[in-house]
Structures are given as structure tokens and as C-alpha cells.
Amino acid sequence: MFTGIIEGLGTITNISPASKGLRFRIRPDFEIENPQTGESISVNGACLTATAFSGDSFAVDVSPETLSRTTLGQFTTGTRVNLERALRLSDRLGGHIVSGHVDCIGTIDQKRPQGEFTVFSFLLDSKHDRYLIEKGSVAIDGISLTVNSCRKGGFSVAIIPHTAKLTTLSFKKPGDKVNIELDIIGKYIEKLLFATGSRTSDKASAPGVDRDLLARHGFL
Image 1 (cartoon, rainbow, N blue to C red):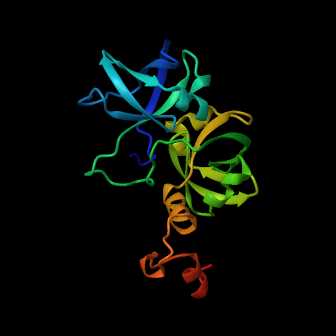
Image 2: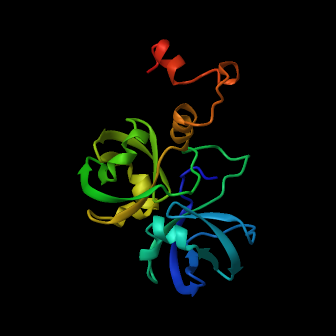
Image 3: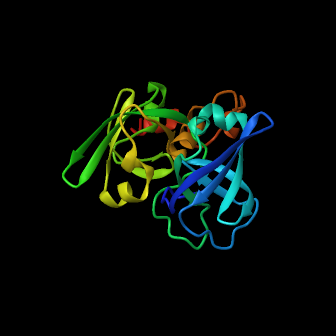
């Protein structure tokens, strides 16, 4: 579990095949205190397991599933990435709940300055529109951001100078691909409300809250 508050950048220093996947060696720009083999590290928003720490770098294995759903398969030696170690229970939850399980790949449509800020517009498959709401949360390459506006098949966010400086967004450009993780809370709510085939014919054993109940009370 992560928060989307990037700890720093890292560099892919080596890529090698690993079964049907890939193995990356990553050198972070910051010191990783008390590294633990097997810990989870978010790399551009994808939750990966650190399989080994050596010197100033660590190794991660990337499965074929992760390669098929993220931009990690496009990495080359020298690629810069956003890094975040897993959330500790004692930490402040500065961003939002981020699982590190990427939902889809999006494309930067526009990047334009707005005073000291930078407004990014992204394109994604319109089937994901229902998980995006204005002023809601979204993770872009692992960065927790607030949705400024939504439209069919797209949305925009405003980046403050601090975020631009500390993440890969500072050198991203229109046409670049990014990893997108949508708000996990919305996905769970949808699953609970619209799941079919899970109820019995006995109404007494049905869930106390369902779509019909919400509609009757004006919530839908």
C-alpha cells in the first residue's frame, strides 16, 4: 500500500530477461534506510518486490502480467522513474490510498503552463470514465494527484512546482505514455452495488444496502 507521495527519482541501470518477464536494477537518487529484501516499492506506480539490495541499487522482477498492463516494458537503460516505498502505519497519509496495481495506460494529450502551475490533460479508454470525478484522486505514474476536470475519455490535473521538480512529470511531454491507477474506493463500491449472482432468493438474507434501496432514498 502506498500514498502517491513520491520519495524521489531513480534510474534504471540494467535490464535483463527473467523467465518470461524482466529484471530491472534501479539506482535511487536517495538513500534507502533499512532496506528489506522482499519489501514492496512503487516504480512509476507499479508495485514491485525488491528481490535484492546491493551497494547503491536494488533489483526487481517484473512479471509478464505487469509488463502487459503498464509502461514498464518500454523502459530502457537510463530511464528515470518515480519511487515510493510502502506505507508504514505510523506515516501521515499525505496523498490517497494507492495499491500500486495499475488499471490502464494513458497518454498525455496536452501540457500547458498556467502561471507557476502546469496543467496536464490525459487520454484513456472511456470505459474508465466512471471512476474519475472532479476533485477526486488519481495516481499518474505513482503520483497522487487531484482531478481538475473530466470529459469523455480524458481528464486534467494541475501540477504544482514542487511536484514537477520531484517527479518525472517535469520532463514528460504530449504523446508520452503513463501508468494510471484509479481510485480503489470507487471500484469497491461499484463491485458491491452492482455485483450480480451473489444474492440468494431469500430476501431476508440479501444485503441491507443495495442499488434499489439507494434509488428509493434519492441517492441514485
